[in-house]
Amino acid sequence: MSKNKTLLPILATIAITSLSAMSHAAAVEFTSQDWQVACDNTRTCRLAGYQAENNSELPVSVLLIRRAGANASVDGQVKFGGAKESSAKALMQLGNRHRISLFIDGKDLGETKPFSAAAGNAELTSAQVSALLEALTKSSKIELVLRNSRWQLSDKGASSVMLKADEAQGRVGTSSAFVRSNDAKKPNSTVLPPKAAPSLRFVAPNPNAAPSSNKKFVMRSSQLSAMMKSTMRDADSDCPSLSDKNSWRVSRLNSTQLLAQHECWTGAYNAGMGIWVLNDTKPYKPTLVTTSATDYDKGKITSVQKGRGIGDCLSKTDWVWTGKAFEKSHESTTGLCRMVEAGGAWQMPTYVTEVKMSR
Image 1 (spheres, one colour):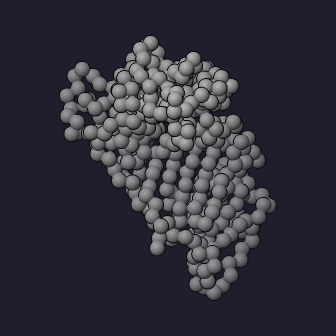
Image 2 (image 1 turned 120 degrees about the horizontal axis):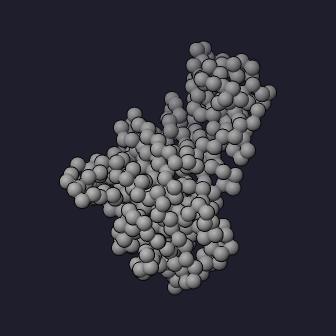
Image 3 (image 1 turned 180 degrees about the vertical axis):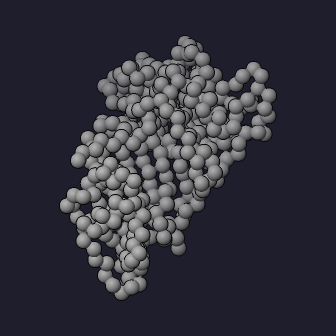
């Protein structure tokens, strides 16, 4: 059974708000036209804008990052796409002697900081960031210029995502809001403070641990499949390949717990593997971690899914083993599918943690 799973929530204008029980800070992801905002569980917000969707000859993206707190500044970066020949030629000209210039409504706002070949982008100056933020709240012509090439950044949808960021950080009605009204009366002291990222302790599995029961785990594939169905609301949809004759892969995590893996689904350009944790003796108590894993390696699970076949946008989720269970350690997308870069232009997390190694 084929299943075309597209996990990125970036192909339509949507707003998703989820509450992390560990951090008590809302994670927000919202897309409007040519702009997207993602705020993670520490209340850091990242706003990414692109060229208009019908203008793929010169792909460009700007990323604006604002952390939580009353006195947080805004950092800006610009990245050119190299998927098209016209932009690729201009990219080849980048170097210490040539910098990108920002123009807003025909006015030259000066050159960015030097282009970083390692990072693949150039940082905007603080003056450029301020001018850009003001321009994005109204209709503006925004261009990034390098020699004779001009990339046009769309302003469509920017004010909507800026307002969403203001809401997420508690800035509406304050002077530090992106979108300010003339009657802003709330003091900046009311702005929400940053939240600390949850701390996780990674414990390396011990595949050679001696079973506490001194009995070898033995179970037929059909029995495993039947047992794992009970961990899902709709196994036929979530893991249609569970009943296939593909073999299970079972490995030991510690003296009492096992990890079980089985192919779950295959789509046009994505695939997902199911991963469960279970006891090695009755009661087995299987726990589903995910049906969309793409890799498992020594206590770390990764799911990377394309937003579309050409792979210019991705979603990613990671889990780490903490000794008794797998805990989600990271969740992000790479922004909109706009031909800026293979794999996506930016890292835009909605969930972050601090992972410490167990000694």
